[in-house]
Length: 284
Length: 284
Image (cartoon, rainbow over all chains, first blue to last red):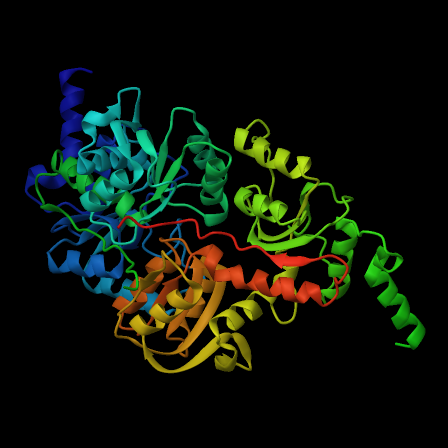
């Protein structure tokens, strides 16, 4: 690339900021598309799901899940562009067909519109970023960067540790209230593989079946799929464990890292991570 | 129905038992089809998923989920026909394509074959039974038969009770280790609706949105669907709670009741309920 075309790209990347104007939400997303490092997909859930893409951006909040609580806190902090990893409207595709008259839907969309906000779903391309943005953030948060297998950034190698201690360490580090574990608490863990977020049957089963894997860490999984398989693998004599952290807590730090990443090319508006609350508590 | 045709049906229902022979697994299932009270569907997951349907039945075990552990315990108790509400092979349809060489699959299927067992998936028609067999068993186990709305057997009416106490009561009654709750512990609960087992987005959202519902009780639900909606409904000012019991514990008593129901028309072989273990524990 010659100097002139590079300068052209940089200028486009900075958008109107160089002219001193406030960037719009769609201009911010344009910078993301230019910096994410992979071609933008035609089939993707990543899109504006609420609000006006042409709204001038006063500040950006990244979050794991744009719950109404997160959106209200972002607004209170002066952040009117919310970049969320998970859906806003309770379905992966954020389709609201059939819910147009639902009072919770109306309350949420009205709040977004009244406060000149825009909400962007940033799921597929943050995972597609090399390395996976969620995986990078989770390894950082857990202090596991030194444990990561250079060949496979979702595989972590540990000195032999008992499952009970291993689980307790994750619970403490991520401040989880309602983590759940399958397996013998005395099992020795040396190699654990993470499937941050939702683990479907495939490759959930294949990860558990790998001979070099002692433990699989997931956000959530169906009880009659990966969870039952974990029980059966153990009953069949395999030394395995499954750690089910909760979906939000299992990817949250990936969107904290997303705020740091955004700051490397968005310098004209403030960027802040707004944590989504772990939804559950357990009866005492 | 005249006396002769009734007698003919009774004779068919009892199958070979009247002749003193041991019934086969498929003959037992034939009796279920005759007694379940609804036409047998063409599209259904209810079928033999493992073992030989022609195996002579020494005893019947009903269970919520035919884990390897359940199958081994059933066999040890002399029960070689296992009637399970949930899948045996980690998918609703029990398809094993791609898992033929999996060592856990091979261990499980070999155990079933070596012990002359048969496993029957009994999901759709037990729910279709009038009233729903799972709902009946759960109401019994919780001691909620007197609380059920006569118009709607999954709706329960209570004297005003705080959510924290309500949740604690369910947890104690069903002996749940890893129950999770969304909502204000001080919320007053008067009307709760149950969606035993898995609650998909629809009708999960519609149940939570009903003005006459304070709490929705489910087995499991996706964190970005019904769980996020519950959080948002609460943030929007609605007085709601969501109780996520765990899938196995949320339907288990329905298969305990299934054993009682089977005994009303299977008298020639012993029938026993074998509880599936709650899969999870929580780090202390």
